[in-house]
Every structure is written in C-alpha cells, then in structure tokens.
Image (tube, rainbow, N blue to C red; front, side, top):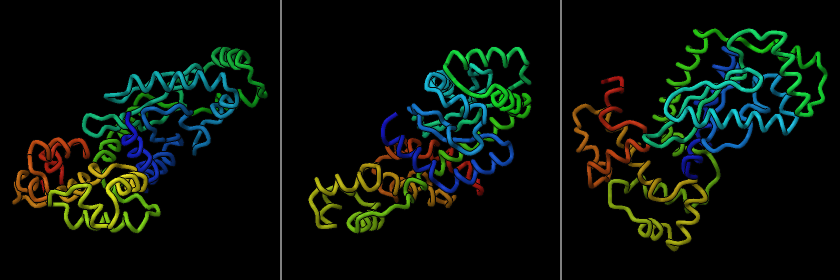
Length: 294
C-alpha cells in the first residue's frame, strides 16, 4: 500500500464517523473494532477498548506477540477481496473485512479475540504449556479465568457482525474523500489561501505553478508545504475537490454524467470515470444509483 492509502486510513480512523461506529458496535458486542492499514506491524487491539483480557496478558511477552503478528499476517493475506476469519494459536477467531477504494486496498475493518465454541479444559492446558514455552510468567488462575471468560460467538452472531462490518466498509469508501478533505489540523495561511483558490477555480485547468503564483510563493516550496500540510499531493487534492463537487451535482437527475464531468473540470469522461472510482470506490453511474433519489 502506498503512503497515500495509509493517509486515508489514518484520516478515517480519526474521523467521528468511524469512532462513533466502532463505539456503537463495541457497546453492542463487547468486542474490539479497529481500522488498520494494510501494512501494520502492531497488535491491532493492544491497549484498545474491549481488548480481550487474556490476549492482553499474552501480549506481555514478545515471543507471544510474534505468534499473534503471524496470525495477523495470515489474515491480511486472506482478506484482500472479501471478509475472512482465521484462528490464532489460542483457538480464537480473528475477522477482517477489506476497505477498498476502487481497486486499491487501503486497510481492514477488524474484530476478533473470540471463540467460535466454548473451550475445553484440555484446550486450556495446551494454551498454558504454550504460554510457558513463550516464557510468560503470569498467575495460572488469572490466565484461566481470562481465557474462559472470553466471548463465544455463534455462527449466526459472527455472520451478523461480518455483515455490519462489510456494510460499514462500503460506507467508509464512499465518505473517505469527505473525511480526507476535512481533516482538522493547523495549516499555514498560504495553504488555506491555496485551498480557497482551488475551490474557486476547480472547474478550470489548474496547474501547480498557477496556484503557487496565486499565493505568492515558488512552485517547489508550495509543492513541499502543500504535501506536508494535507498529506496528499496537489494533483490528488484537486481531483478530490472536483469529485466532491461531482458527487453534489449527481444529486440533480437532469444532469448527465458527461455534463457533470466537464462541469467540475475534467476534459475527458474516461479520466473522470477512472478518478471517480479510485476515490469513491464506485463508478459515477453506480454512485448515482445508490443515492436516495435513485
């Protein structure tokens, strides 16, 4: 995944829409819910809300963490196209749903640290031996209590959770552009003026040099500061502004897709279709079809 994909995931993770959703699903299920980038080398739930107490104990040892990370790697490889569930060394299920923007995989909505069936005493003894081999020094009774208090999901419950995650991943793909565009962080006045200029002239054939001149700075310096302030390059930002305007125009059923494309500044319908799908995850006609008025 490129850095742009990671910046999208970071913006989505910090957005109110994701945090409200994760909190609501966590309250309903008691499970942790995270949105992580594709290339993430950390335990996704460690220190997070609703982390499984047993997993928190296991994560105290680096050798145990390594085994958990191997499980995450298997999940990453298996869930690139659709929801997938794998099982860790302790017998717990981990489920991930891909978040895609068009053809680009940018991250995973993930939950887990649950059993699919109630564990047995023999299973715990195997886990205890593994923990000992990892060098974990923890009270046996504390570990046993945490292990057997782990949530058990029926097939129907897991299916419902996967469905909710899948629907939300589609929603995140649709709103991702708005979230990236509205990131709230301090920015230099020059960048604020540049954004205003782009918004006023987005239908025109804008160039980096033209915008830099409008804010009285060199092209090189403007390019550097713009990328640092927004997290995306100039061309991508302009495309996102135009696509956001196109999404608003799509609400008007009297406008053809080709008219919308040229209205927002694209000189090629093919290019418009390609950029629209890359940013929203849907073709313009697909996006319009799922609008309320459609």
